[in-house]
Image 1 (spheres, rainbow, N blue to C red):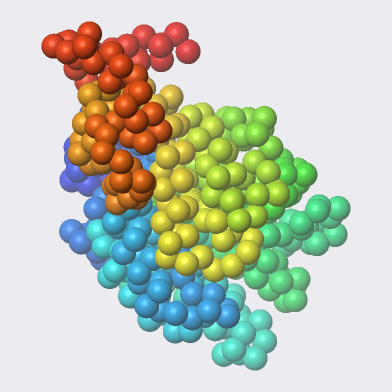
Image 2: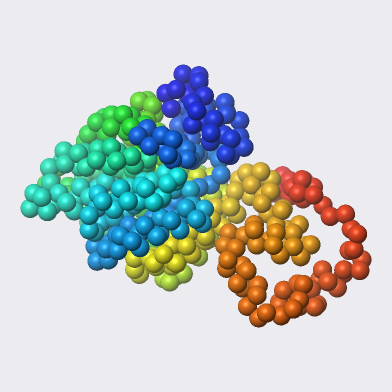
Length: 443
């Protein structure tokens, strides 16, 4: 960030610009102003693909994984990391709270390469600190554990610095349906309520900035008071934490430390766009990393769909990274298959939003698919899908000998019109994008 502010274009910026198809100097200016971050840690330079998050870039998708307090299957978590890489995630977060937390983190850092990896150091600090001290650990313990994570090469870390002691006290006394649903937020609130001290990250923010500057990693300002029910969306607790985070963000920018801000959570459909606009205004365009948002509270077992609905709107309105939700949300630790389902749902949502946000630049993929679909080019279609194996399996599930598919069989529209379409000059991808461009501008 400081290099870009000095007028140069760092190598990581050049690489992100190449991957995204954007102008490097423009990207460097946005990085300098804090409207873009690049997920990386100087200790893993060269082993991790620099990943840009922010204005003018493709909406990224993050996959959460990690052991729970009751299910510790390290092999399963490694498989989830490999699934994230295979099916196109942009980042992975290790949220482990069971077993050898340090060992699992180091395993995920290896298995997830070349993706950037994030963590929530609060989990390990609280869990292992209580065991070590037989009581609430001292404030400096939280900072010590944070440094362990950064030293291991973590590229970005959620820091719940915005939940102050005052906000924690208000939350537990509030009439919220679900007072605090963030695990890290609950841990810090319990620590503050028990000790009577201020949030150790908030009270030692300058030292936190020193650590992230040393490793050139990215702070993800956590939303400890995000709404866990649509009835709680945009209340004084959520907004109070956002204002605190905005002030902390400005101090980080002054120091040249990269920061993105996390968002809700459960939000009614008609307020998703408002949420994004409000956050961008308060933070002067900081990258926005949203969990979902889930637009209904009743989709247990299908929360990846409820989340994708909100995520598509959020991405279209300017959200920069989507944290996926799996079908197991609110019910269980997800299986590898459920991780795959959640990732693909989130990728669909992110791409749908990018068609609006980035226009023809994002829609080239769609134009290529549509042209192959019109020509009944099945190998070409399978190659372009998010899950080629599943697409092939469904296409052949009845085994009928038809050039089309078994929805219409011999009565496929393209077969009915085959005589008249024969020899037709099909539109090119650029022609298709021009058509979309006109419609996109009208919208």
